[in-house]
Structure formats: structure tokens, C-alpha cells
Length: 210
Ligand SMILES: Cc1cc2nc3c(=O)[nH]c(=O)nc-3n(C[C@H](O)[C@H](O)[C@H](O)COP(=O)(O)O)c2cc1C
Image (cartoon, rainbow, N blue to C red):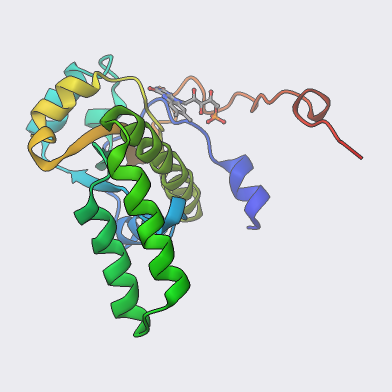
């Protein structure tokens, strides 16, 4: 399947059947998240993979009682850095130098540029910036999932403060942004499964400036 065919095939699954997704598929979906581009390559987020049934039940209660949370196989939680710190920025730049085996002047200047800017901004501004990066990774995960014939549901419908408490995210310097249940559609109970995909026409989406 080509990329556009995958995008057409994916849909926001509304009911899942509890079937387990093989670990190798989950690992490739996680790899798609790892490979997603991020601003300055900082990857300012972490992913939590929940398979524990009790924890899923607890999360469902604070997520609009959405059934996919307990009926999925693996529940991914995207959690963004609560702010940018010098340590966090330096860690990624040091990692880059280590992996590439070179120290580049331009790259080091860019490090100083970020160090002079991000840690001085307020935490909320930094969190909002980091949180945007999780949405790019979400799309990467969803497209790999459908490539693996795995269904998923992107979710913002949850109380992030309560989820942060359940997973002790505050102590880790993280804040939850998105949920992504991964599993298999329950064809008999999924009201969306056979409905047409709806998108506004290109004429409302795209303007050209020639
Ligand atoms: C950031 C984001 C948050 C969403 N939150 C939810 C959600 O909490 N529950 C849900 O059932 N669908 C949720 N959706 C699914 C959208 O409603 C769905 O993607 C949209 O209607 C387009 O349909 P499609 O994904 O089937 O093409 C979310 C989608 C995105 C991108």
C-alpha cells in the first residue's frame, strides 16, 4: 500500500475487541515514534505503554469512559517535557556528538542559541512547544499502526491532570498530552467502521499564491 492508501485506510477506531497486538508490531510502532521529526531534534517527550488491566480501567474513568482504553491491546500515553532545561538540551546535543563522533562548530553555536532561549522562557510556553512535538509523533505512530493492520484511536478526551497523577508524571517532569489505544476493531460495535471518511474539499483547504 502506498502512503495515501494508508492514510485513507486509517480511521479513528471507536470500538476494539480486546485481541492482543504482537509485540513486534508494537515495537515497530514505537520505532515510528522514535523516528518522528521534532523541533531542533530535541524529542521533548516520553511514551508510556500500558498493558496492565487495572491501570487501563483507572484511566478509562478519567477519559470520558471511552471503551477503547480498556478494550485495546496496548495503550500508548504521550507525555511532553514540562519545560526545557539546560540539562535536557545538553543531553540531546551531547548524544548527537557521541553518535556522530564529531563536534561541529555550527552545531555547538546552535546549542548555545537554544540554551540562551528556551530555559529562560516560562514553563507553560515551553510545555506548549514540547506538546506540539507529540502530535507529530502521534501521526507517525498512527500511520505505522495501519501499515501493520493495527487499529488505533488518537485521543485528547481525557483529564490530563488526573492522568499525570495516576502515572506520577509530575515527579518525572512530564505532562500527558495524548492517548493512543492500539488494538483491533470490533466490527459489530464500531459505529464509524463502515462510514465514509469526511474531509472538506481541497478548495476550502488550499489557497495558492502564485
Ligand atoms: C488530536 C486528536 C484528538 C482526538 N481525540 C479523540 C477522542 O478523545 N476520542 C475519539 O473517539 N476520537 C478522537 N479523535 C479522532 C477524531 O475525531 C478523528 O480523527 C476525526 O474525526 C477524523 O476521523 P478519522 O480519524 O476517522 O479520519 C481525535 C483526533 C485527534 C487528531
